[in-house]
Length: 208
Image 1: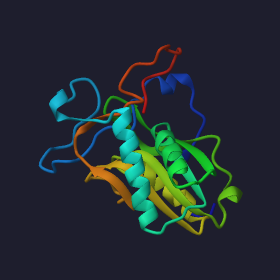
Image 2: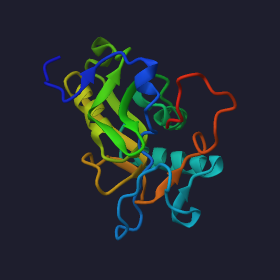
Image 3: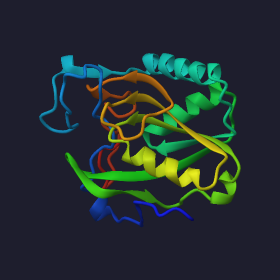
Image 4: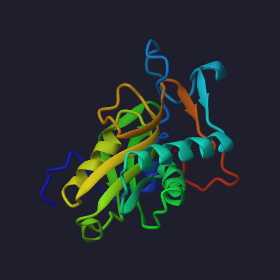
């Protein structure tokens, strides 16, 4: 790797993971609203973005159409787990891209608590698989943008071109994504994380 990353590559144990909070559910629509953390004591239902499965289908299809209309044809889609997996899969079908990769990045350690730097969890994608490719990075939301910046910078060293696509983007995001379905500063309920798991594994926490 030629670029000096502002990230740490580590294996994390369950003791650390137990303190995590879900990544990236903060949002922007009414710019007069301040930033809201996604945790206990959050905003009421009237202040939330409610993204159901049907609306997600519409959002991902419209996002794909925007990408296609722009003439961008990625060789592969790199999803940021876990919320980005749904976005990447939907875009993969809509854009007829079968080559999908996954990158797992952690940033939050508790309710409204973050690491100083985002952490890229192994296994990290093989740079050889990305060399010379046109890459679309997909995630559910650009919150602070730190996670997207880490992944985008990782790709920049190896690929021919990289662009980012998200369902939601917040105004404070340091990465201004190339393709965004909606801008909002509201708390977001995503269909894949709004309900608790059907079974809880020891040491796991609710996560995006």
